[in-house]
Image 1 (cartoon, rainbow, N blue to C red):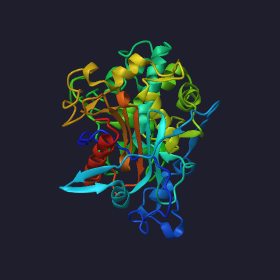
Image 2 (cartoon, one colour):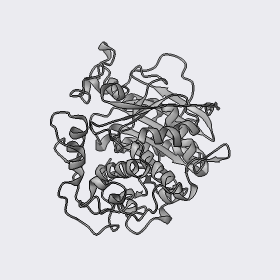
Image 3 (cartoon, rainbow, N blue to C red):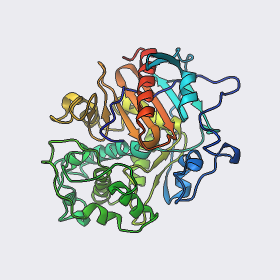
Image 4 (spheres, one colour):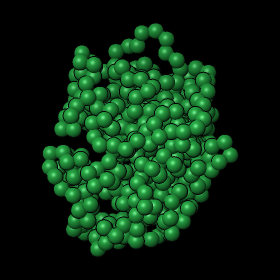
Length: 411
């Protein structure tokens, strides 16, 4: 995702058990239906013919570490059928079915007040498959930072990254504070346009040895001038999240997969194992490499909707989560309508402009989890868009999200 995203709070479609034959999803032939939606090799994972298959098997294509589940599953109680969802685009009123036939949605789950109200899959995807998060992983990384702070493993949010990650010492990112990295406000120069020739492309190639080599740590520590004073300006940069990954490794002396398993996935009550993609230095791709089922993404959203608490246990520190997702608690330059038109940016969360506090986890190619805590609304949306962030798809998704939020009375 980039800062041009002016999103309408949401990314949802509801859960209603679907009876009858499903209508055709868009571009099925292009996406490889005849071949059973095959996944690609590391070099071909993002090819059109392989996107659907690859995006639900990335942890089998690239090196990964499992995130195990344990204990009682957090029940998603079946609720009443979803209300009628309609949205307006270019003066035309469209329906849920229109959206599914127009957009490359692979899964859509809506939970309201802990009840599963809508669940839909396309392109032969199922509830058992793990979908790649892409940049939704950034928000999960932030949650781990919050827990590490509460446990005293990170002493202060205003410590520099190199305090915990000496491999970054002497670099611009090493001198950035944890707070500024969480806000994507370090001011360090980073180019992210998804051209494949930008800084995030270099990081991906170095982590997974695709197309060209390199050292992932050196991608972060290479000479990077300051484009802005620290803490004054939001600029989307996956490098800032990846630096936080190094901070977590150094502060805890454990890998992020283990932290996610112990601190989030097991107490969350997930129903399936998740996974992190892991680069060749043994560092997880915290900027975009998490994988989980749509239902477990919904459970994560439920935890966030309850301000980090499940069944009387505070899993994520409430004060940290509010700081991360409440525009009023953020410094100037990061609040709604300041980070960009119609949105704000907290601690690795996108913030909406609705009357009620709402926020989202966003990832390229159409991944989104939207949470409106006051209304207990969680919307999970995974997809295989034609490009990383095409304007037309983002615009229609925004209109659709508005329709979902209105239908569930969460405006």
